[in-house]
Image (cartoon, rainbow, N blue to C red):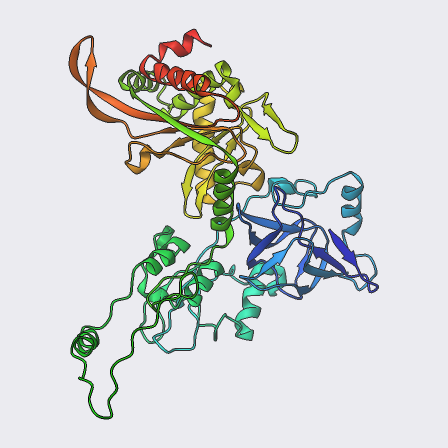
Length: 511
């Protein structure tokens, strides 16, 4: 996506990030005005409703304009960066390479899908942190932690890279949000205040908008970095009133002056506004934006459109745990998780009951049963609940499932999964037992038709061969779309899953 001006400059527009995403929030610019960029160089990090991704520029030349600041939301198709020819000519250096890629049909512009040669193998380098002082109350300086520039041995654009030059430019201009940029590189401020680590501009803006003192927070990220969840946790904690002021206020409200001459009776309190502004200053208001808004919209749509039913059954998982222990003892270098065994059981059940591996096409008034099982795995992350997808999971062995599940959940929590990995599922497995709960009535991941939930595995009394024994018991729950099947199919699937949990040998018989 681009536009070309009469002077030969090229305007790179925010590309279509796919999967129905129409906007992205700028997290951090990696270049500054005046920097030289090459074809497929990453110029900005943006956060969509699904993931944080690097966006490379398809042109080479000198940056003449950056459209949008950190924390600003840009719609798809709007200008992102303007690049001029490095030599002042009409054709930016490297533009011919981009045109060849364009003619070849490459429309991918995200890191991992690059348009240049070998661009897709570029790995993101983890940022190194420096500390910026958190100002005392009433101070004007904004507390930020920026990426540390590389040690300079020459001109910034040559030896330190565009990102470092951009940091220097911002520091010299004093354009930090809300005030001057504090010194970087030190562990504490000159006056002795404790420094704070904040990488994400989104976290800084969230704290600034809600008046959260970053210096009072303890970061839960690597090295004490303050993350969004830390700010949201602080917002969820009501502020404490000073004891003296609270006592005086309570005494005043409990013992009002009696009405008398010249002193009218107290008026009745005004009714609170329902659904409008907060009725109390201590209320916490959290904007429904980003991934939280996507989750809310999707779950609301699921409840509106899908007539869902939940059924459940308790299962003795003692034999399943014993099977896992035997597998891992035989091959300790390639361990298999309980989740991988449950995924294998789900695949076996969907082969028997393909009605649940489907979705309803409301416009076409039809039910579409998928040829492959694209297994979604519900994963709780710092950014919210994500459901990464293992495509054609039925083709994987149990060991391959275990490795893919481990890597996928790790990538989801790190925020490195591309948007395409977060959609397109046909069936979801949700292990909510990790939260220490037994059961749930989960909402189906629209537009899928079913979701299997697994509770915690705990010791419970169980009857075995007529005798009471202590066994490892779990609760399995299946939520399904009643439009795709009736209770017989859903019950048959859940019973098959429970039987395989109790007798893993049945998996071998059904392979």
